Length: 436
Image (cartoon, rainbow, N blue to C red):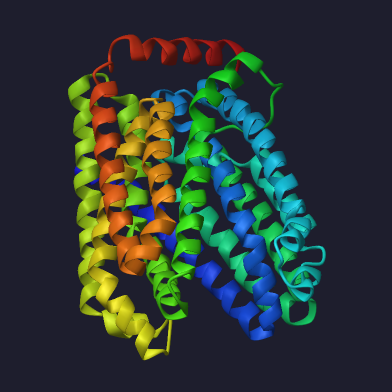
């Protein structure tokens, strides 16, 4: 079990690292181009990131429907086609939100020169979202059928396109160059992913007619996944705002630690995704819980290794993000709290992926609403009373609460494995073979 999860998660981990590298390069190129350009891009990503992550969540929901049929391409392809219709609706909603960024930014008081700098970027990124939503899902299927190495190749290709075009186009075109790079990178991701999937399944992916009943079944799993992403981003946005009222030094330290958190939990996210097919294919309660337990242990181990590395190299690493000794001092003092919070976040993430494997994402959505809802409500009062330290204590408590809720939920819902919980999978699989 452990070796299989490691083999599946390593390509996913490397693809996440690759994507982060691409984001860092784009940010650096924009920062060197002009401060107003970087500021405008930050405004845009405040909407683009949750929108694209919601589309990714909607596509990720197809994995538990595909995993039981990894040796039956005739059953796999119709599920992917249904998922693409569903994600297209989510992508169109996200595209409309992206197109509304200039108006929203103006109404929120963003300086006029920053809003003007956006130019045609909203249109290009809206096009990217539609392309990703309409043609995505290949990476989720590759993970579900045990071919996660194809995900790495798609990520490497799309990131290479992003970096090369950003470096070449940003100096003469500014944010328009970023939009072109992002759109062509999305086309590359979809194209290479489809090619890898075609090789894995031995047939072209194609696109079928929408099947409303099957799409509705996918939506019952996929849309709660997308909603959990939006809840988390919303709560983290409130926390960032709350950190801002504690003062410039503490807010900067919070921003650095929040960025580092993304790196710390990468291993857990990769292992969690790799565990979804194992949980989905489990025929007994014991095997489902064994897969989830193995994923949790690997995730905690990976997070612990990253945390120990950061503790050992804390000063030099923080120096890469800020040259202000006062900011580094605050960040170093908060580092243990951040690492504990990240470990709790890793545990809850794996349990959440386990619930995805069981097709119980609605339960996970309820837990997120409770955990992050309470955190969002408490953020401003806590920051006003106990400062940024209190915020990180609150985040630790919130992640611990969510970890307990997710783990309890997985234990309760996994008790149905092999019984009533398998009936729906069988019905959908039968329809897939009939309509494929």
